[in-house]
Image 1: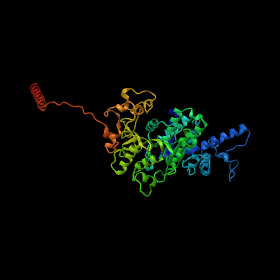
Image 2 (image 1 turned 135 degrees about the vertical axis):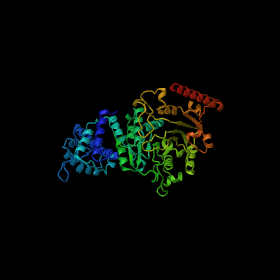
Image 3 (image 1 turned 60 degrees about the vertical axis):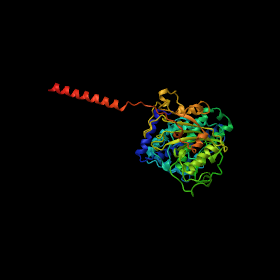
Image 4 (image 1 turned 90 degrees about the vertical axis):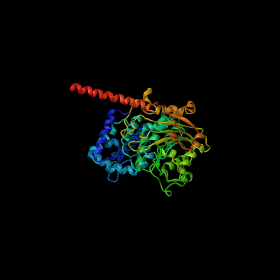
Length: 512
């Protein structure tokens, strides 16, 4: 966890950006991302230097060239460790006029990160602000992976306004729930085709580290973890930069995070490649048939982005692969042919495991749309016997635009540090949802449909035309209320009226 002191430092830098004229939180994070990358290049160069000194050999992989540039200025001046102690005006000149142009020409360390830095722009407006940001980043213990990761998560939580194309951050506790329910393993290949800031991939990586601590000691598995386990696509270069840096700061060396318009490009090269998909794709709007991948149109003929993304997930998953994805409620009960066809495919051709209905304020302040988590396994041969439903009525935060926590930090999320008391369940359903998901093949099958979670046999879903909305199957018990007879109520009213009249008469007598 990052300390309150560190948070207040970040807040002060954030305020300085705002007063310096940069009010877009994405741009603030982007500028900090560039500086973190520059710091990382220096750290890598220092590691190589130390290795060369120990072995008494020349440096094998130089990040910064030897000697001077065409103007006779030393390349060493571009290193973080050199310019961080310069006067603000000199530092501003070095970073803006020399380091950033160098970044754009850099093949760098051959990583995802250097690829996304090639169009880096320096927009910090003045030397004083740059000096403050460099000083803050220099005092953060960057060798501690948890601190680095938490620092970046805290900054990302400040993206409090929706971006372009309906982008916004999925709340961390919802991501954690989906990751816990799908339980990634060290051998999985995980994909998020609309990755944004890479929140799902980061959380999946943290889960694997926590639950399989020995996996990273194995050479083959470690290589897989750093280079071929995580795949993220987005068509916003700012998001790719921020997502890549998020992965790096959480200790993933070279994830496959790249530019891709997931719905427009044909996916034949990627089909049946991934064993786990975690995603919250944008559902806003529709696309033209011409600009949509023909591969996806073959699965379902539609212009709606939410249905096209579902078709994409089915295409990308290998047989046996599983998915946890967020969809708007309309996907569950929409009456168009495309809606019904996709739901029929999930139930009949694949294995639909569960539907978790989320409360409608889950994505405030970005969106008030009602959503659900769909959990399914690709089999190409059916396998749906019972579908598990759960209605989340409280996720630990208020469901208004402020989204304030309803419980102390240690009692929030699907895996709270402290066990919740019975009355606290009504403020955070996530631990209960996770526990019941793990028992969906056992005692959950016996639960009545009046409960918060229950299972519905496939036959009932087929009978309802593949409708997957929870309210279609939930039974509500109405308590029978005994009303008094109307004549008895009238008699009571007459008695009260006469008592009031008597009281008025007595009061008049006293005053007269």
